[in-house]
Image (cartoon, rainbow, N blue to C red; front, side, top):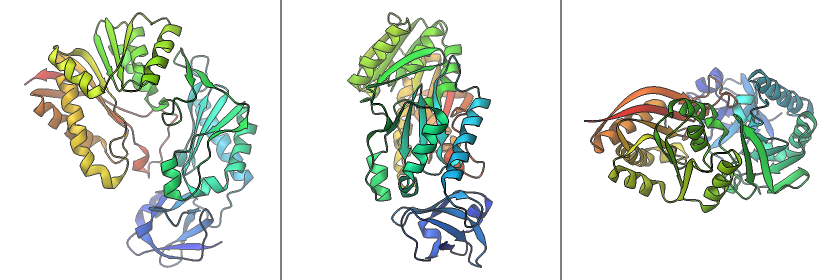
Length: 394
């Protein structure tokens, strides 16, 4: 097997278990091809693990095994899929109440560059590295065999495929065609048309936080900004909210959200509005604010290089959220950017509150649900952070 040698001073993170080798850490490459499995060694030649080589990416190697010369073969793939299924079973997934969840969470399940979400009888796959792309048929075989899924859909983001220098797949790659994903989450029934292209199709990572919002929403006036199809809104409505307003700039998301609310018996409890979330937050502030405001924007810092620029954007989002929250009310403030850690998110909340002439008191902190596991040596994997804060006048 060919080798990738690291520079002196870049060994410690990989030795400690970090699964990524950045391009600037590479001293030399022994003739490896894109997508090929390589052994990563330190400057003295000591093996640190085996991973997929990606010469055009900022992440030169994604390590899938700590064993030198490990083979990424059908046996390994099958064992990793089986382990992922077993972990979800320990989390009581699937269940009668929840049939939609994350089945494979990339590095967290020993599958760098692979995301698999389960929607009832369908699987949605994202191949995020040239290594997983090269081995896609082997991966699809194992998923089909071990899950019994009737449909496997490839939704690899074109932007990621471009970075990794391969042509992304699209649509059904195994099984029968489908025009919608049908599943349950926490007892809610969803039917999402396949053209609703947000990531894999749904945000399973916020499941636990939605449960907490349901617990807090009783008797409150709720604004769900950046609502997508309204899963937070459904949670608030079932929790006994006095009123719920869901806002998103996607007309498709609003139409689907209304249909989901009707199907679950909350059609008369939630108002869906196609609008820019920032405008909706401004309007809410002018009207005196809501008792509970949920601000869950799209990823504002997709890379480490965009982090500094994104900090200002997060502060503005926090300012708008604080201003839209009535004095004594609760703000749920989220970030799905791996480059923004919890401490940084907290500082943007403090800055935004100051700009809104408010005071924010952090009550709770939340992260992605348990079906999104993260290696302790891989802090970037803990990408989702959320703060619940009480907002008061200064």
